[in-house]
Each structure stands twice: as C-alpha cells, then as structure tokens.
Image (cartoon, rainbow, N blue to C red; front, side):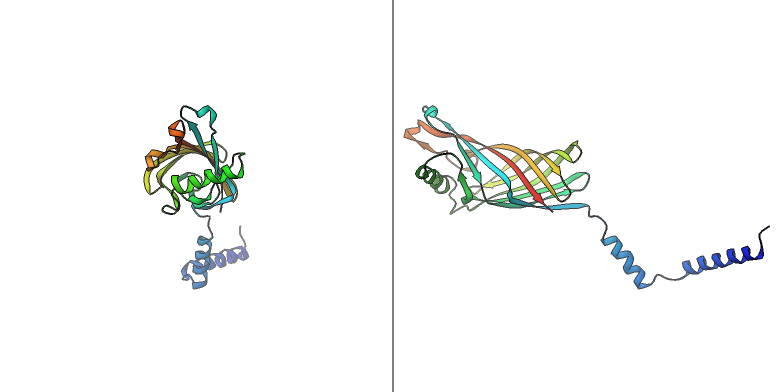
Length: 224
C-alpha cells in the first residue's frame, strides 16, 4: 500500500500540472515559440547563378555550297546572371530567370586575332545589334521534374526567351543536381535565328553562310 509520503508527492505533482496549464502564456514564452518557428527550414531554396563557375556555349555551323571550306564556330557567353528557385524535396514548383549581356559573347576558335575581331564585330553589330538590344533574357513559366537518383533530377523548363527584341517560347531539358549549398544544371537546346528576326550571316554571295539553327549547351552552377 502506498505511504502517505507517496500520496503527498502525487498531490503535489498534480497541483503543479494544473497550475502550469492554468497560467497564461507569458510574452517571453510567445517570443521563444515565434523564434523557433522562424528558424525552421524554409520550404523554398533560392540560388544565385555564378557565371565564374559556369560554362555557357553556343555552336554556329557553316552552311552553303562552300561550307566544306568554312569553319563552324564555338562561342562562349561570358557575362550572365540570374536566379533559380526550387521547392525542397519535391523541386516543384520552381522557376528560373537568366539575363545575358549580349556584348559578352566571345569566339573560342583557334583563329588569328584579326579574324577573331572581325567575327565578333559582325556578331555584335550585325547579328545581335547589341547597341539596340543589350540583354538576352529568359524567364520560366513552368518547370517539371522527376527524380533520377539521389539528389539528381531531370527537369523540363518552359519559358519565354527575349532575343534581338523578339520574345518567343522556349523549352529546354536539364539535369539538375542539388548539393548542400549549391546546384548544378546541365543541358542543351536549339533555336532558330530567323524566329527572332535575325538574318544568318552570309558571305561570298551566299556560298558560305551560317546555318539558321544554333546549338546552346550549358553547365551552370548556382549558390544559395
């Protein structure tokens, strides 16, 4: 049979519990709970694109009757910025915004300095018209994703690309891998210059020209 001391302890514990529930929350306790909620992990991750750590390439292909005598060109996009937003765990909903400085495109081919300057001058003044259209902008409208393995996802990014003053829909596929404080997106897409009001460069009466289609490939790093 329980002793009187045991009964006393039980009554004291019961009284303490009733007293605790009867007391109103103090401001300090409310502040503590609010701080705990604020420190909970966010549901959305925001990543800033790092051009220094990334690689963004354009391939232009020679065409025309004398295309065998001409050269394909590899062009690097040097200056770009933007941000990507992804929902943790599910990835979706997500978004991507990217801005490219049109005059930052540089020829990577092994050509003479004179040829390099001529190609870049033509690209900037006649093709992209960078003085009139200094930026190339992509904004996503939808992103879908499926898990491949671990932290790697296959995504389909649909949005609008504004190039040479013309806005057109664009869809690209990219594999996206998430790390502790960064992500890496790799993929490619193709676009037609004529869709953006650009006339492909043509010389020698059209016997040598750049094909209408350009191939873009990217390996982009973004950090939280």
